[in-house]
Length: 86
Image (cartoon, rainbow, N blue to C red; front, side, top):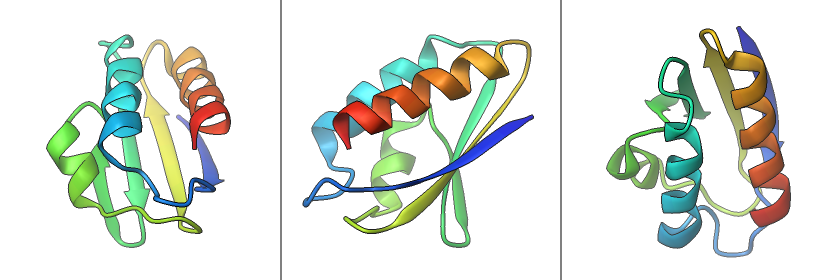
């Protein structure tokens, strides 16, 4: 299992456009479960409505956890996406 934390820097937080792109990125790793946690709530990163329902705002620190056969590549892909877009 791979896990890391990231603080959202985008002033509007994790809104619809980057959230949908992040979900598409996560779906590339079908055999790996990728979870997004904000506070005490955790959702599957492949579910757009669940990701949006977290209400991640600027300054929130989220935890990403990847578990499965492609966990290393999945965690790195999500980390890169976050750094470049949020």
